[in-house]
Amino acid sequence: MNISLPKLNRWIVVGIGLVCAIALNACSQAIFKTEAAQVSQLVISTLGDFRTFNPAFNGEFPNIFLYTSEGLIGENGENSKIEPALAESWEISPDKQRVTFTLRDGLKWSDGHPLTVDDVIFTYRDVYLNEKIPTDFRDLLRIGKSGKFPSVRKVDQQRVEFTTPEPFAPFLRVLGVGILPEHALRESVFTNDDEGKPKFLSTWGTNTDPKELVVSGPFMLESYTPSQRYVFRRNPNYWRKDSQGQPLPHIERIVMQVVESTDTELLRFRSGGLDQLGGLSSLRPEDFSLLKQEERRGNFEIQQGGLRTGTLYTMFNLNTGRRKDGTPLVDPIKSRWFNTKEFRQAVAYAINRDKLINNVFRGLAKPQNSPISVQSPFYLSPEEGLRTYDYNPQKSKELLRQAGFKYDNQQQLLDAEGHRVRFSMITNAENKLRVAIGAQIKQDLAAIGMQVDFAPISFGTVVEKLDTSLDWECIMLGLTGGIEPNDGFNVWNPDGGSHTFNQGSKPGGQPVLGRQVADWEKEIGQLYIQGAQELDENKRKAIYAKTQKITQENLPFIYLANQMAMAAVRNRIENVKYTALGLTYWNIAEQKVTDR
Image: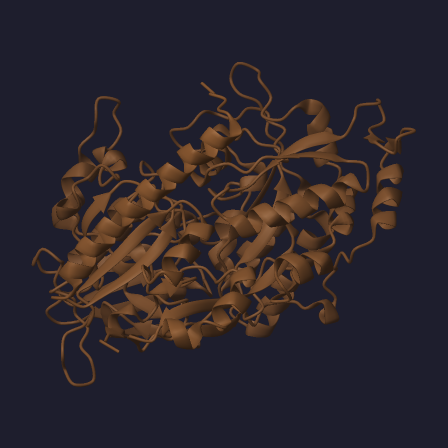
């Protein structure tokens, strides 16, 4: 129920609420600072609560597993090279179809149980490759046109061997996913609930007592208070040691505060309540000039890591399917617009990216045109033939007319049947940068006669619409990137769990009937399979170049801008090596907290 208050009284109520909120937050910070006097502590933040404590079901970034989980191998955040992790070494067969890993001696889980080859076998054979367990990681393990999976076998107590049915170029990087503890999870995998589904599906949800979580990473989740904070403790059984032979990590505790918006993050950082700003994403461009002036006084430094590796985009729901009761996922009239290539191209030409970069990003960004990160050797630049969509509203109107759209006397855009072109666009309200971008896109599209109902909503609601209800028309979000294109296979595979612009039925979810997959979608999926099969780097580059050309022609994602990666880090946090690839978390075990 909405209550209307007189203007003066309304501001008094808001003011009292703000004072109370500041007081409560100050008390909370005081408690942690008192405790921190005894231990080294890092205070960071995240926008909103995470959806799961189970690594097998993670599909978001950031997440707790950046600190709690580790795989057989890792990736260096500075140069993207593959490095040993739980496995101290590996051997690749001459035919490139077998990889044999040797585990480190004396590995332990956080609860003290030995971490063994049996855990690796359990993780892959019984969880990631288990058809009864719907995990997106399985998409990354599908090999070739047949979608066959690798086999895994125990060689001896220290070695485990993976065999692929055919050459698979990105296979080694794929095996960096987190290993799971068999002794803690085996029963849930092989025991069914009342519906006949593995209990594992509901194991280690966010309602789980953090003390029950068994991890292999540098930190353990000690406590979780919904909508307030996650507290991580140093894992005493973590395997790494520093150059002097001292156990890592150096930091005893990480407090990750849950904040409701990027504005709140800024306020907390400037008041000294956070040790990092932008460490798990990037500093907002509008905050850069402000904070740059405060570096010395605030005892922090703004670190820069080049262009971000992810993508920022807007996309339309291209799904032509319906639910069991016959209800279409998207209004058929709007679906015809969205599935018209010229319509999407017109939108791309109508968005003024230069204006976005100058006004919203404050010049700290570049136009974005590809799903593959600029740091990747497989990135195709515009100079090499990648299509771009420079601002050209006249071109937009020409394309729309060619596709059968028309304008009325008020210059409002109508389709061939006379329907006004109007649709909704959503993004996560916590991200003020995206909210500002959405406001400009609304204006830009109004200039070519489209009415956009822009409605920022909570991130949780965005994810629910994207993954579960599929009830959305246009959305603005981002995806994480990286060096290896095949990491995005579940996005480009028409049957992938992250093929969000035309999502199929998901295991355990409501069925989608009558969904159609366009030829260009199928072609991209097949090219990604070919790219993974090809071992010659030059030939792989040619294959992924073709995928990028197809995506820019058909625009399932309309890419916007690639922001500079930046983070503000307190000087008392030593050895932070911030990069666009690894942000601040990739070498967290080596970081230290000092008194300066």
